[in-house]
Length: 355
Image 1: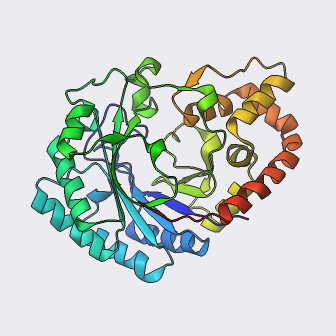
Image 2 (image 1 turned 180 degrees about the vertical axis):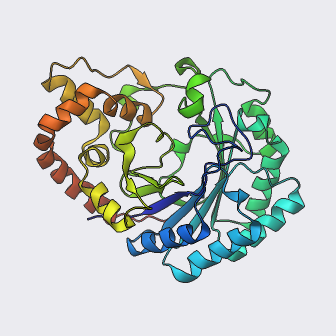
């Protein structure tokens, strides 16, 4: 069985804002939370499974009391083998440079290693753009390992008042694509420009035409974060990847951390057929296998917003799920062979790439 690489803790679905594009339908009225004791247990359990990284996200994780968040960071660094802690936040708390510097200094002293600030044409309807600039500058000055400002935009940018250029000017930083980051980068300060997606509330506000497209042939075949990253949600759900598109997608769910030990759930993920197809066989390879060897009327579109769209298209198709039920075992030999090759390649790689 593989080691767990990273655990994402969606500590709450509550957020101080209610963005129109939110894939998890977070809002001030959504009060689902993990308790601090539950967060501590999940950190301990993930550490036993080999995880080297924890990501605190949501919802808005900084709605936790400042003192409690600092105590939690100290607990993780003092009681587990977790080496890296990241927080994903909308930056609402960075109301001035001095305030941002003080908050981030406290977090860093307590054990935080990485800062990710979510922004874009939808977030900034609620959070002033200057807050993002204060958070980014303070994070860089404090010298977190990674300071990423993750922008989400549409092709018809902007549905609201801020343009991509406004963000670049505020941050004094040119936007780059997340795909241009080295996948194993541990030291980077940057502004990444990504596509907003039409999951959750976004499906009612963002059309497919609003989303930048990638040619099918240019999509990566594998999603190697699957299985190696688990996401624990405040409702108890555990998903096999980052979980952003998880509501209403049962194929991503692999258990409930309130009902079972995380080790049992992780073992199930390693044995799960869909999980192994996504990580080792590949979404495009599977799409082409199904199209070639069945009478199903399923063929790739010319372009996609990304791998998530292709993944959802495949595993929400009843005919594809029926095919897996009857023919899935025929993929096992291919999956095992590819698993040996991929795992041996990953395990021999040098993960640290300092820029």
